[in-house]
Image 1 (cartoon, rainbow, N blue to C red):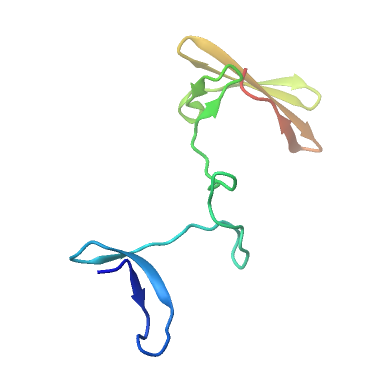
Image 2: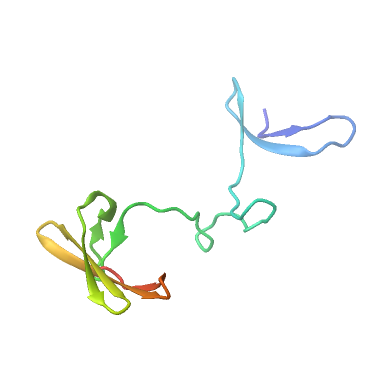
Length: 110
């Protein structure tokens, strides 16, 4: 069998893509991004799926599981705060900058 199904055969219906396993057909689809009513385009290497993994890459290239680690926050005065985490006996620091109470910038974990 083919990996496609014609809707309303005999009257020129659309063909939908599916994978034929011999005993069943599984629909094949693509993931698109964007808010409701907006097409943000297909998910590709250049347009990745926007997800948060709970991990971060430090400037040194080390992958840090920041969401699962205890964090120490320090207010540095003015509009700057610092977060620190320790992973594999190494302490990593990230600086956050605020303007008018809104987060306006953050550094990479170093």
